[in-house]
Image (cartoon, rainbow, N blue to C red; front, side, top):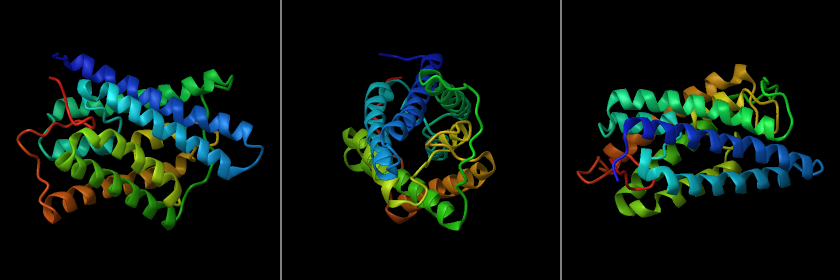
Length: 235
């Protein structure tokens, strides 16, 4: 099936919105039910996020590539696998979608739609964590596309699940997600003043992942490779 640009952009909006609704909504539910046990709340948040990532990538990957992440879109743009105009539209769609998703989660839990986070997340350890998380994500995507394209959805989901626990920042690894999470004063939030440093670290991590993949391992874009996290893209 052939998908028009508007359908691809719609897939990025919808996927990004549902991803953020899951991240924020499961965080609210987890914090409510965990009775102060942060580990239990984080575990619940982790499972929900990993699960929805796998589903969304599998379902929407053939439509848009299921990036839902400006850092991932940037990588495919730099690999010349995605036209600049469509890449720009993807980033705008991801930003709009994630913000809408945060508001949707607030609405589902009866909270104010517009919020500003008061959760401080700053410092060298947090920034290094975001660089490592995004580096790992990009390396996993490009390596798995090279070896087992059908396994990219589960690889992406598992990288994020692991990142929740092995990084100090709980692995945002996504500039659009970071921006949207600055607009929720709930379990998953980040103070707006702390978001720019996270985003800078994420972009640096994505670029480092791209350089290591291409220059270190020779994983240049192949003739049959698609800019898709599902390993395929119908166009």
